[in-house]
Length: 162
Picture 1: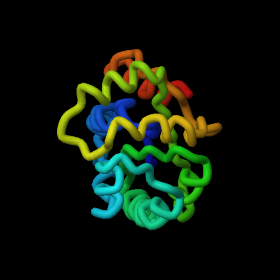
Picture 2: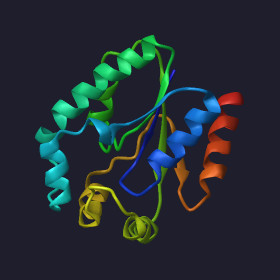
Picture 3: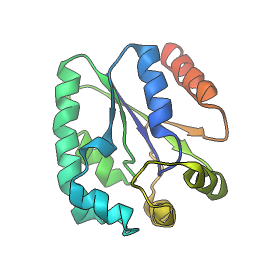
Picture 4: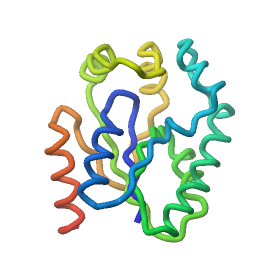
């Protein structure tokens, strides 16, 4: 099984994903690690990525997802902001994907981005991500005003009692 923790920057995808992966005894991957240098520089400069910028990244992740699926599963933190991105990500999978969407108020997410250090994502891009974000119709949504531990506990409860 592949679990994809999605949402805009600053929602805690990596933090939730790592804890969930530990709990499920699966490897964790961060989609940010697969961005090209060009895309990283663009975001660091405060320039929003467009669909064209993302397509190669999404295709590469799709291939990785298929590899991880064959190896027994994984947890991936990936923005996956639009339905079309999510469709591309899972285009070659054979099993179900469990989507875990993290959402919260713009003020809360911006405060998290303001306190974050050592990440290439420019906080000025949050508005552009919120503008294109499409709430997943599939999967589960969690409010990031709850603690990471509470979110992961809720996910694991849903896995046991769907």
